[in-house]
Length: 86
Image (cartoon, rainbow, N blue to C red; front, top):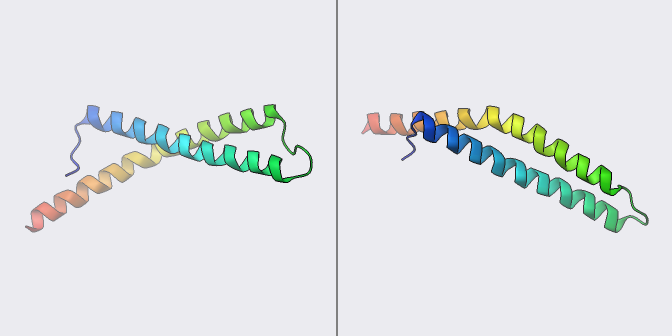
């Protein structure tokens, strides 16, 4: 089921990394906005929120670009083992 060529694998890794980073950045943004809403005064300025979102996006892109290739290799190897057992 999961069998990538190198060009397709690179594209899949990039798209998965961006999607992961966007989701985690959205969670960060939601947390900061909720912290500002529920506290009596603004806990974070707009600059803090924007810079935090950029930082979270860059860090998660770096981490996910190193993790997703391993996950895809694991999925490919698992599929090959299942085929060899049959």
